[in-house]
Length: 232
Image (tube, rainbow, N blue to C red; front, top):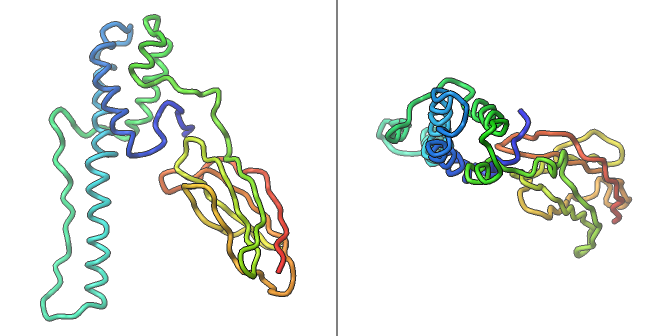
């Protein structure tokens, strides 16, 4: 699904955006020509998504380290007490929040498109709802630059990048015309490639490319390939 630019790129900001949309629809919904039932369904979707991306996801992330520790203890720990595995308990649903069918966020994006076409819609309403975004300035790929620096006895390649509104960048590299391989994932520029030379006595050609990285997944198109030579 193509990212909607008005929707926050950072997961931590998404619950507030969703709750704002749900709350403001109680104000603007009656002025729109969209059926009341459809507005109410969108509000239910927004509240459900806010719970999933907020309370539920935070609880899952807090629970995950406990499971890793328990597995480590079960496999390599000591003692005579039988292991009791942890059980995840989801946080209670806030008042007014009910589980919804799959595709809740996709339905919200579709509703935003309907709202923007409604005769009663204007820029002030869109700003208050949080659905005004700079779609015309979206970027299909990251932008990055390369520079070769000498640090001590070796040369390194510094990659400066612009991720725009995305979580980070996913980087691949190949050396001396070999196969592409994952170089790393980074959320803050710059990234420094400090790999030793394949042959410590000979220069090598390194090529780089990037795509966006969001919610744990690389996505979008690759950038053009940048090529540099790293010397002993």
